[in-house]
Amino acid sequence: MAGILTCLWKYRNYIVIVLTPLLLLPLPLISPTSEAKCGYVIILMALYWCTECIPLAVTALLPVILFPMMGIMESNEVCIQYLKDSNMLFIGGLLVAIAVEHWNLHRRIALQVLLIVGVKPSLLMIGFMGTTAFLSMWISNTASTAMMLPIANAVLQQLCDTEANAEERDFNMAAAKNGVDNQAFEMGLEAQQRRLKTEQKYTKLTKGMSLSVCYAASIGGTATLTGTTPNVIMKGQIDELFPDNGGIINFATWFGFSFPNMLLMLALSWLWLQFMFLGFNLKSTFGCGTKKEGDREAFQVIKDEHKKLGRMSFAEGCVLTIFTLLVVLWFTREPGFIPGWATVLFNKDKTYVTDGTVAILMSALFFCIPSKLPRCCGRSEDGASSEAPAALLNWDVVHEKMPWNILLLLGGGFALAHGSEKSGLSLWLGESLIPLQSIPPFAISILLCLLVAMFTECSSNTATTTLFLPILASMATAIKIHPLYVMFPCTISASLAFMLPVATPPNAIAFSYGNLKVLDMAKAGFILNILGVITINIAINTWGVAMFNLNEFPSWANVTKTP
Image (cartoon, rainbow, N blue to C red; front, side, top):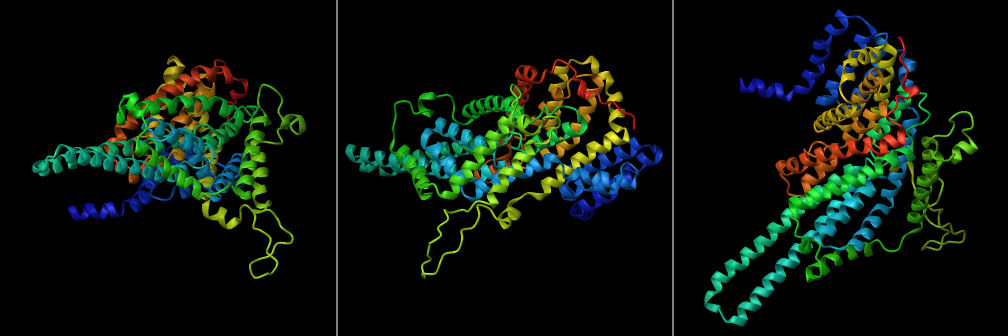
């Protein structure tokens, strides 16, 4: 029996691939309507995504096969969903992130911030969390975590070694002064106990620092539209399901809502991790009025790392300039309170220029600008005329670092949303959810956020938002509440994967670095999940209401159609 179970477990993915569509087949056979057929595809994809029996990106391609074969949509109509404006925005943002990583600009920024905050435990945690969150706003959460954790470990190891050596040296000096040679054995034991206690303290601190970095990466990614994939998915779904929304979600409006929420979540996360791993002895953890040798040596580690980078190169300066220009253009394209440059110059009667246009324009410059100052008369070492310098980016680097699978996931989500609308499944879902009108909207939002935060612990945040957002849009339309009132909080909640090492790549990286146990992450992450849901709902019910006029059901959301 044990052998059979072992064999089944080995082949579980193949079993799921074959059995799942067969077990779900009665749904379209008993009810051969467009709604049932679309529901079959969505449930099948949801189970494939949750079990990951085949790669997520391959599952995202199933609408290309099943929608035309089931008569839900024509193939041309399905395929066009896989490369929309939101995908272009995502590609542009990723190209900028790749350029920043390629020229090590993110490392320079991180080390510069750490030189400013210093190495006292609480300040160090603030420094690492703030820097990681800022970097995650622009580059991938995984990259920012992978870069920051080795720096954190090196600094903490130096602090631990220096403090342990200093205590041992002080103890030996005191022993020699008191002339207690006959108690050498007891003294040796006491010295070992002191060193062990110091190492235990720093082991606990390393756990806290590792968790603070990976949590800050996930939190920071929520602050900008291109910070993490669920944000782009939400923009794409809003534009797909509500095409007359007037560009309500753009870089500026997303940042205006999410950045204050990110700061609040980051502060509460720091307080909780401070309490768990450092305690609230502020004089000790902030180092008020103290300056130890260990601090100086640990600070020197950061200085040495920064020194290795040398002076800022021409390429780094160009990348920083393009990055800054991109952010400025995003903010000023359509700020909301005044006409933006795109409105004045291009979008007079239609939205010709979007955030995606700007992202592709600026990221294309990486392939046009040389990585070194051109020198017409330059010579190589052998006296021959030197070659022209390479561009800031080349396609080989992009091809290696670009997560192409995410683009297919985005497209699969847009195809599902469009299929739900065309088949009438959205209308059916909306009518089925009308009884929810009796529940206060704030209660609906909190319950849905908790559900999404739980679901994203065992499923990718991309798959979670792709599955939930069309359903939430249908529900909001049916019960006449602003779609953003539930879609925005749930999108951010999809990034609250704090409890399990497998929930996100940053968690997995921290788990491998920080001598963590699953219980450590679960205890810290559970409270942070609750705090995250609370802060998101405070945000949506305060400045969110003011920004997006969420107390009224918008006319653009009234898109009830018959299939």
